[in-house]
Length: 336
Image (cartoon, rainbow, N blue to C red; front, top):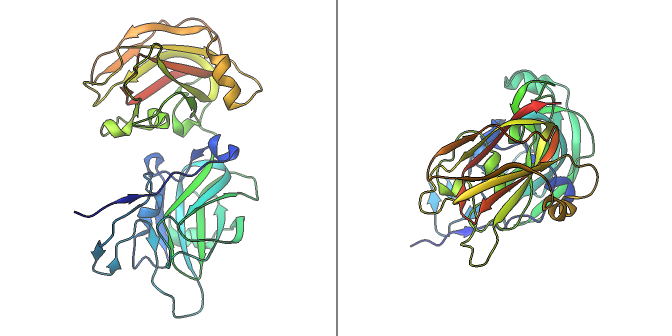
């Protein structure tokens, strides 16, 4: 039986921790074109799962690699790829991840961005591009957390690698823009609207950011699940809304969680100004109740209305009692 090695997650700086991955295909991101992908297709570079390595696994073109990998260049020039972001957004920085690429990683990379209404490759190649990451040396089998050097709003990226080689994953950390109109009803916690998971007490089986993904979860691994609690108390996570607003309806989806769904849930909320993500953990214990404890059922969508009249809020604390797994959380409200 072949052993699979999974790359460890990156230790994110503050600018990345406060962002979402705009290059996530679950938000609509896609690799549109590249100069070459002989050894490994471009689409793998955007896979939201950590890169893996399977010793002894080969395909028709050689060693199977989990990422984008070009052939060895025997001419002048370099390789490139064009990526459509999942949402138009402002970019804080990048993770150019070469996990498991050792003798075949790209030695250097540069990233440009543009705004284009079309995915037509010819139109994109003819567009005006702005450098967001100057040519930067890369190492093998590691994460490279690199801040963007220009501000702006962008729809597409062009990644250049010099001269050839492989990139396991490209993460594009930023915030969607222009997605919510004042007074309209939105899922204010959705990733595509800029919502993000800020802090949590446990994420043994699944990360809280999964709660904010589009659609319903595809399995138990596509949600937030905590370990079995063996002490008093309950588990929780903090969500920063993409836009401040007044919440009107909550949906808690326990899809695929049957013997391990939480017994109950409750939510607290507040308008927060200043501080840090970590300072919110203590503050959140004293936020007013938006929704008192409500019973949950297995593999179901629960809809809660008649919420407490707290006015506009920026953050929510989602409590599950005592522990368990939830697939999705929708926080519907009117944006300010």
